[in-house]
Length: 169
Image (tube, rainbow, N blue to C red):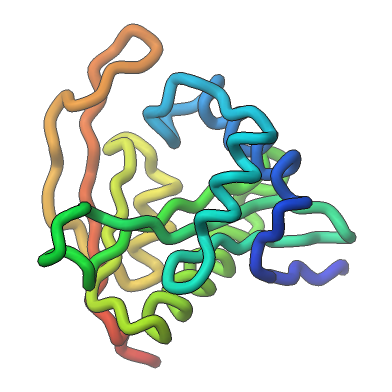
């Protein structure tokens, strides 16, 4: 069996990341984004994720099969200790344990960077995203009702959080 490795995203990953993200934009409610990203936009997004904010990719047999990132939660100074995560896995590789590898990698980075809280916002019916965050120590803290609209329906968003440092088993 080929091993999945996780590494920091580099600008050369922009095409693969855009493909994975755009599939989610166009076919799922994993993101409430409605507009696919260009490779140039994705490259700029990667370049913005350096230092405390990061993006990582999962590689399998030399191909990028998923990515995760940390982004600022809010612009106001009081929120600087809080970040928001994003995790996406290529359609054909879902359900193989790649999501937890990616999420744990960005959580480890968030902890090392000194963040106190990581927030996750998932479409409330997205069972896989909810399970992913719960298995990595997140707790549900609320549900925002009908805050997004995609595919001609109103969607609820479940809000999860984990406090850092995380307890280790």
